[in-house]
Image 1 (spheres, protein in one colour):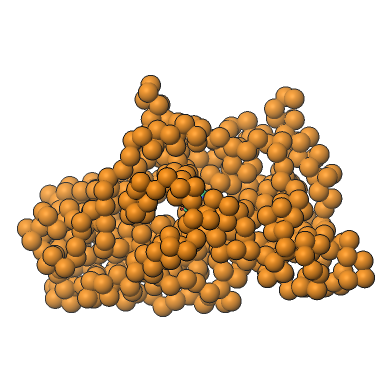
Image 2 (cartoon, rainbow, N blue to C red; image 1 turned 60 degrees about the vertical axis):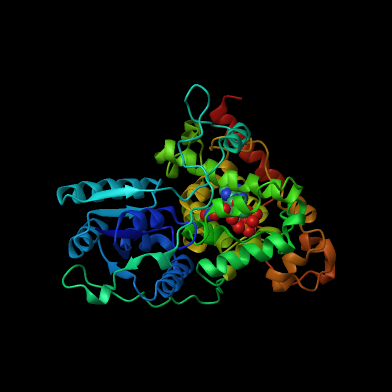
Length: 459
Ligand code: FAD
């Protein structure tokens, strides 16, 4: 029997249930990846290039026996299956809105050829849709979800082993879809990406676990310290599966491990929300927010541009936006503050910011990004209450108390010592001439945000 293993966001060989399933069922397996313009188009250079590098790493792990094709997945997968006379195509189930539609279409097409599409596992510790309230409805609030998620538990890592599989060399195929090389890296400008692939992800995890996990509960909120795992990108592409990490933490009741498990539960929760309400990627979960007024007039574009390029005059926000431009990544605390600034100080639509993040972030992920934006905007499930408006100065003073994060990313402010860097307008003669003035008065805009919320909430 022959089978196709169609890789998508599961670019690894270890703990790979779909690979294990393909190996168990079939004598020979063709490994396939389809470059799909529908996904590559909006991805942005950092995320695309990271993918390309992951593909090169995966091809190397498989000794080059990875067929890469470019085109419509329905056609490409059907042609690959036909070329090797496969009876089955194995995948990790994709639970996002586009992936579900695509896989339905692929499944119908394959069924016409007598080929079965078999999904094993998902990108999450607990598959979206599994954790439900006792009455069968989905959770809308995180804390009870997390409790039920922990009680539900997850499987042990899969013992997938590529060396036990007889991989088909794509070079020997007659007919079938046209193989293409992995595309060249995009021009990344000043962005420097972390090393890609499974090995790099596992190394990253091991050094985080050994060196930083113990302090994670506190360290995670300090953007100047490298206190978080930076695994989001590897998790997004499936270079590492959360189950692998959770198995490694089994029995660890320490504060760091508990806090880390909670963040992985957030990731699963937001994917669960998207699975139940696929429209939430584009639409307010709380439909009252459809009526909130955002500024979209001519000067809105200019204000958006100042935010995007890190020239708002609020150092903590600007440092975050410049970190994003330089690293394709931003610390979580600063993501919250920068997002809040866009929505509640500039009154611009959350989806403008979400779209920019999806393009600029190397870890851009539909479920995590759109729902965190909605969390900040107040329109999400279990959101921060709308009236809780982040103050960019207080947040900076609290979470970057020495000012090191700001000085690292905003060179104009390097002359101001300590936490005074968060308020350069108070620096008198030391205030740098080349750093922009504050573009708004935070106190006034906070009132304005509350006024607009009052209009839709009837308060
Ligand atoms: P760690 O602190 O080491 O956390 C470990 C893992 O837990 C992360 O890798 C991630 O998978 C998960 N996690 C942590 N925090 C969250 C969270 N708030 N929501 C969901 N999962 C979480 N995360 C993305 O992966 N992709 C996005 O596109 C994305 N967009 C965001 C947009 C906004 C406005 C905000 C406020 C947050 C966003 N996040 C997103 C969540 C979070 O900021 C990142 O997951 C985190 O900063 C990644 O860094 P890390 O891996 O070092 O995190």
